[in-house]
Image (cartoon, rainbow, N blue to C red; front, side):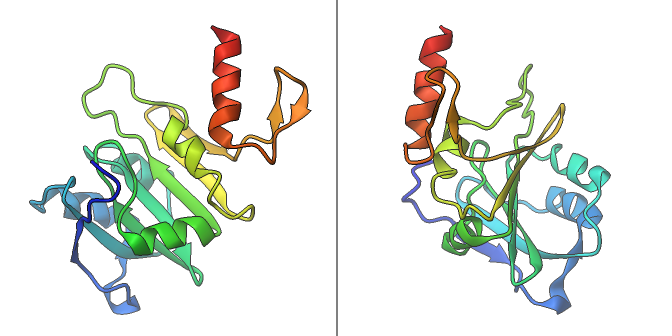
Length: 173
């Protein structure tokens, strides 16, 4: 999907009256017919986020993102290969206390179990107060923008995260 293409938001107001428990989101979404490449949902979540709730999200064929706004947790559906919802999601992701997403298996033999190149690139845009998290078939991880280049034994805080990742990968080949 081209990032500049707009996806249509379906569904729900982000108000307390429409809040969902995380355990109810996956069954709800599995009963909805929509094209994740062209449409997305956002839900306000209430209650506790549990490992079982997160694990259930991995059964969906598209990525899911969790961001926070004013102390409220918001779930957004993404595409098969991207967690981005709409413009509101991008603003929340960049300024949220947490920015968490999934990498679903999608029938692949080996799911993506590390931040993708895009995830690392996006780490340049989020606040340094934002905790970045990723759930995949083998567990959950927390990551951040690269701040140290082990190849050169130098700081890379003022270098594009993609350049640091590329240099690291080139040195490992």
